[in-house]
Length: 115
Ligand code: AMP
Ligand code: ZN
Image: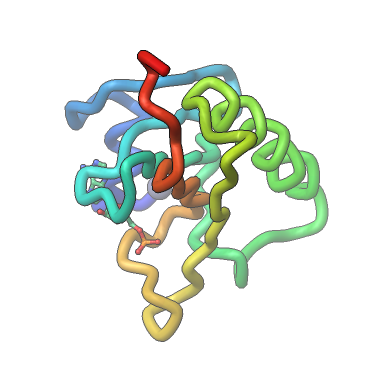
């Protein structure tokens, strides 16, 4: 792990964050600067810099992110209204944290919970 990786530090609990989900392979937490009513980051614990750096053997980690996205979307009540899944790749693609993560973004059309 690079010593300066913020997401590795969050995963190792060296930086504060509240996990909405954690298992041996992933953590999920809210984006600190949300672009939508629901904006979660789904983060593999393995330090992979970006999509450019995935290797043979990483397929199950990557594939599992989508199963996790489906689960988190349902938990957030946005599975039916819909959502976006996004990987930013390298600086030109808008990536600022160089530890691979999937953005789960939605909730614009979420019905209020009292309805
Ligand atoms: P990206 O542009 O794909 O690298 O996304 C990085 C995201 O991490 C941005 O949307 C930031 O708002 C978010 N972020 C940065 N620091 C934190 C933090 N400490 N906790 C939660 N999200 C963060
Ligand atoms: Zn990292």
